[in-house]
Image (cartoon, rainbow, N blue to C red; front, side, top):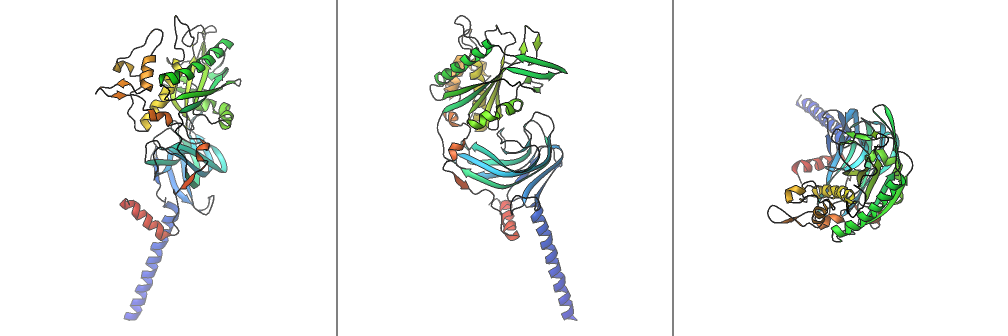
Length: 440
């Protein structure tokens, strides 16, 4: 009797072990994220799983499914060397990815968590394709790389699968010359409040903005005391802009997504560090004005890792705000300087450097001058020569001029970095998960 009871107990024990391992295996195959964290803006809207059916290679893909609009991602922290370029690639497949509003930066993408930097955005339904994202570690020793179904400004819905992750370390480039692209959009053809608005630049507009781009190049070197220099290309775009972005704070403006399709080919041919877009959004003579809430330039934006700003021509083409005149305005390139500095201000804050707000000049005793505007403020800002509250010198740290977008040439001699090596079996997965819980 005891022997029979022991046999039954052994069978029950083995069955229990089998059930336990079956449960662990199911959990492992569907919910083991291999060190990735998951995050979403609207909690409970998106589902995160490991997919063993739809995958690019032998490893299960990372699947994000949002049946309603959301911003969701898998992300992982990994150790990096400070002031070093990194390239992250993955394969991605999408199904019915739709942004909540257009134009937008929302979709399947690689991004750097807690910044606006991201890769190309994939929308709609697409088979497997390669995504690439390059970033600079600046003074950080840890980066958070995310694989996202969403965006900074607009949510999206649909399904995305990510897999075949790869991280490469490039060579540090200390070059402080910024290569810029200036896009002059001659025409706008947009619908505003159910009315079609057509606006065009004249030859004088174009010539003035070209002259100011050259002045900006010279002033950048002068104001930074050659801590940085500028080279540039100017492109005149005939094809009209057909959409604008709107915000309650700024009104209508030309955001990166409004012009990406018009300039993307230029950006693929040449690797740029910064983008200016120049537009006309009003014409006083024709009584046409698109609401813009008192701005002539908007900066601090980003187009797939490249700083981006929007410069608006005045509605009155006789306005001297951009025109050099020794009696009225000898610093017409000021708006170029100002908007570019917004990007350096953002980069400084993201890199952990304490920098004064660009608009806080009054706080430090600076004021606009009749002929030169805020030129003295920009000079001290760019040379880190503003006197702070404790008597210290503050402004743009010179190292920030090295923090340009990363380019392919930085990876001519790249080294692959371990990022997402999958466990060989469930036991390795359990050990890995326990180490993560313990913080090892």
